[in-house]
Length: 111
Image 1 (cartoon, rainbow, N blue to C red):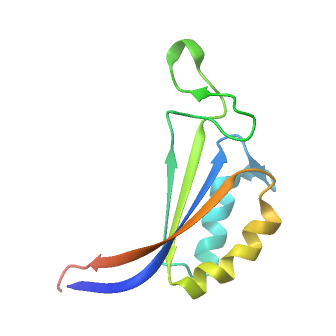
Image 2 (cartoon, helix red, strand yellow; image 1 turned 180 degrees about the vertical axis):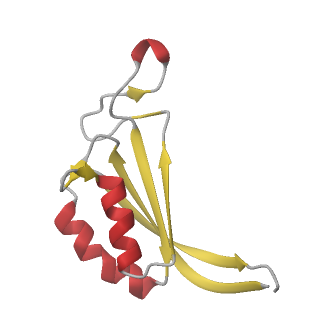
């Protein structure tokens, strides 16, 4: 079955070492997105990047960083994404958030 719907993709760019309440921030955000009923979440670990301080973080063996870039992608309707934003605004001390329109195509196996 293929379900199509207009939705929104929220991307949150943070550092791997960022924490909230003693747990990695990416984990904290995913747990709260699940509690908020958002349709989906994925955490991606980057191999290189830079942010606020323009310091390059890399996974190269000779320059191994302990703070690699992390991208959290959340997907749902605009209403649910907008409802989740105040929590992010209260939580993020640094980082960047982008939002874009997305066509959601959900594939499910027939039973």
